[in-house]
Image 1 (cartoon, rainbow, N blue to C red):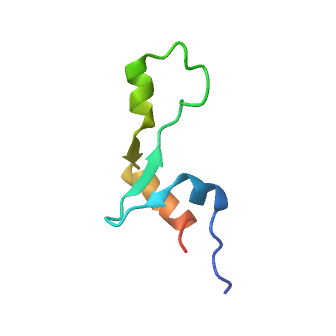
Image 2: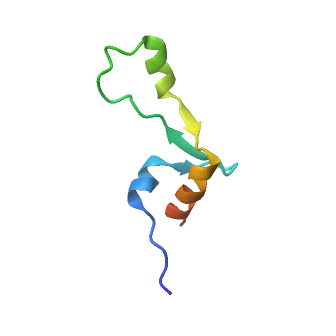
Length: 64
């Protein structure tokens, strides 16, 4: 059976931390920023972990 290919779209969006948690960035920071508060935009900069249910699927996609 051939090797499973990495899903390139997922590989660009997610990183696996050493702890095994998948790191992702928050959506909503690309446009229509003038109606969003400073606090909201500042919080959108930060990375966060992925929900366990989604992490299972993403790990399969970015498996090397």
